[in-house]
Length: 77
Image 1 (tube, rainbow, N blue to C red):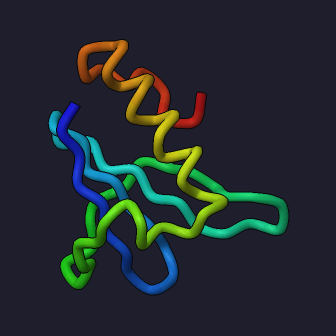
Image 2 (image 1 turned 120 degrees about the horizontal axis):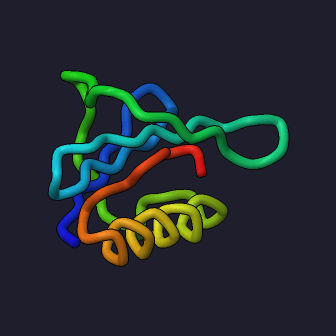
Image 3 (image 1 turned 60 degrees about the vertical axis):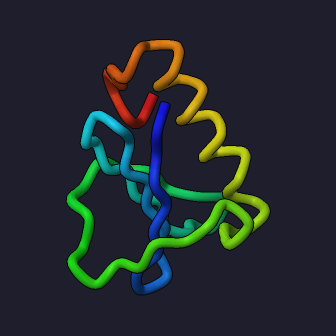
């Protein structure tokens, strides 16, 4: 599945090929994930620019989206 990564104001975003945007923000223990709109000021980044602790979460979203042929169901599952 095609996806593009972004960052803005300390948050990280992924826009999937179906237009769905997911945002991650740091939480006390890990990362909070939610559906959202991509902020206008977000800048595109490479996978290597993600914090190491977030990379596994992003890969999991990509694997799930690919397995579901682009349908995400609940983004918080």
